[in-house]
Image 1 (tube, rainbow, N blue to C red):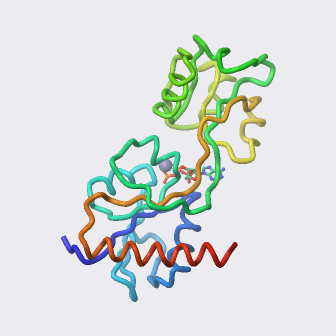
Image 2 (cartoon, protein in one colour; image 1 turned 30 degrees about the horizontal axis):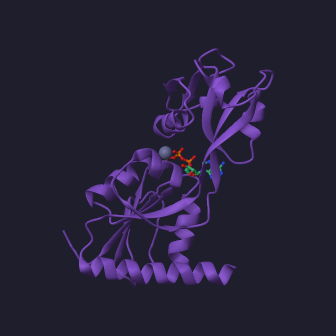
Image 3 (cartoon, rainbow, N blue to C red; image 1 turned 180 degrees about the horizontal axis):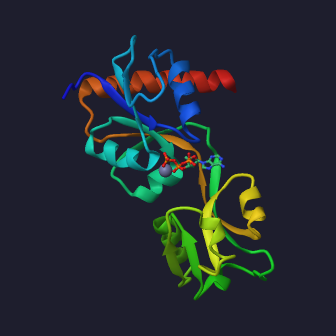
Length: 214
Ligand code: ATP
Ligand code: ZN
């Protein structure tokens, strides 16, 4: 493997993609991102961009297949991979929240005792419940979490919320926020000295871009 380039993994298509590409471009790194490409070489910086599913990025960075990755803090925390979070990027802000059916009375987290909660974030939810001394059943599902209470699959949900409109349209109300998220840059713990130097250059550029916007 080439120790002298930085391989940067970003989401192939989804809510992080556009802002991730924009950030790299604003750092002055040029590359051709023709549709459908899975990787591309930068033309004016020793970097290669990999386009992946966001959920796979922490694992690739832990293994050192990618040296850097841009993911939601929610995905990075849930994955529990051994990577460094080197910078918060300020976009894709959202929260991980618990929702219950709107007509249900809710007086606090103890109301979740003995209930079942559907989520794609079992680890973060488990930590939250444990910290609050609540025993509930975590029902892990991989998508369309919000529908679970209305079809009797679970009593509550724990899912990503930004405006809250998805919860509302499924007859749910947001009752607890368990994690506040934004896009983060994660880095492998196995960088060569050259790669660490490139990362420092990149972080310097990212901070300049962010400061210029403030
Ligand atoms: P993939 O196919 O790559 O697995 P995905 O469906 O898991 O994609 P997206 O819905 O594109 O992921 O969301 C990517 C990330 O964007 C989330 O992990 C979260 O950090 C953030 N995000 C999700 N929903 C919102 C939202 N409504 N507003 C802002 N950010 C969000
Ligand atoms: Zn995903």
